Structures are given as structure tokens and as C-alpha cells.
Image (tube, rainbow, N blue to C red; front, side, top):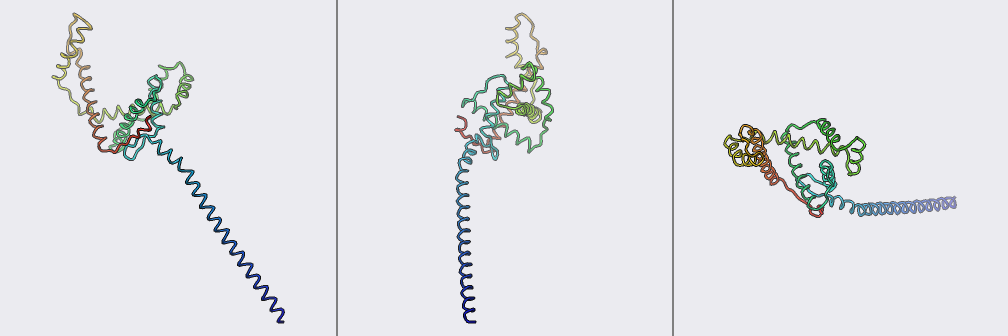
Length: 250
């Protein structure tokens, strides 16, 4: 009986020892697994740093909490050149001019959103785009090839045309109603600018104000509207933090 108890005691001790060994091994494996996981996480973060830096580097301009990426700048240059029928210019000077124009877009878009000015419907650009295709391309296939060759999409073209209409409508609603041109201003412009030019172009023919009144008034109104827009944009720039990353414009 004593021998049996001794054997059982030995077996229990051995079993306890085995369980302890297995437990320690499990702890070691768990610790090793945690170390491997941590190392993998650190490695992933390290590998992600260049990509993150690339994202930061690709910001060309920030306007408040909004950004203009290098890709946005590139697309704007390509689309504008396509619509103007010229080759895209990626020189630093051209990039700077485009960046300035896109800054103004951001400021105006913010004003449109906050003040709820009326904006044109996207469908309004369809007849404009159709007319553009007819004037510049012999058929739809040639147009689509040209779009592809420029590295843009038809949606890019539509977006640009829609923005042009949006800008014109914003100016008409926001600034033109406040612009007034007096009869005296029209008379002065007519005598100082129109009459001398008309006499050179049509010597001996009478030059009458009423024949030019509407054109003169439109000219003076347009100049005044442009001045009002420029003033508003300057004030808007002062109210927003604008950061231009010069290295992105090179």
C-alpha cells in the first residue's frame, strides 16, 4: 500500500512538473508572439513613413483647412490648356499662376457654401461641351483621343466648364447689382476713348454717343465689377491662412 502511494505521489509530482513546464513554454511562446507582433507593427510604421511623407510633400497649397494637391494643380493645368487649345505649361511660373487661380477658387467655393448663392446645375454644361467638341474636333472619336492624350478625363472637362459658369453666376449675383455707372462717366469715356478710336477707324464718319452707349456702359461696368472682385478676394485672403509650398511649384 505504501509502495502504491509512493508511486502515485511520484506520478502526481511528475504531472505537476510537466504542467509547469508546459505553462512556462506557453508563456514563452506568448511572449515571443507579442514581441514578433510588436516588431511587425514597428516595421509597418517605419515602412509607412515614406508614404506619409510623400502625401505631405504632395500638398501644393493649403487654404485654411482645405488643400490643393500637386495632382490637383497638374490636372488644372492640363484641363485649362485643353480648353484653350494650347500645350500645357508646367513651368514654375505657370504653376504659380495656376496655384493663385486655384486659391481664388477655394475662397469663392467657401463663400458659395456658407452664403448659399445659387449655382448652376451640372446639366447646363452639356450644350457648352457639345459646342466645344463641334468647333475643335471633327468627330467624337477625335475628341476622346485628345482627352486621353492630355492625361485628363471628360469629367475633368465638365467640372472645369461647370466651374466657369459657377464663377460667372457668383460674380453676377454677388457684385454686379451694386455697380452703377453714371451718364457722366459714359460721356467721358466716349469722348476720351471711343471718339478718337472711331475717327481713326472710320475717318470722316460721324461718331454719335447713342451708337456706343450700351457698349461703353458694359465696358465700364465690367471694369468696376472686376475691381470689386479683386478687392473682395484680397480681403478674403487676409481672413484665411494660405500656405504655398514653393517646392511643389518647381
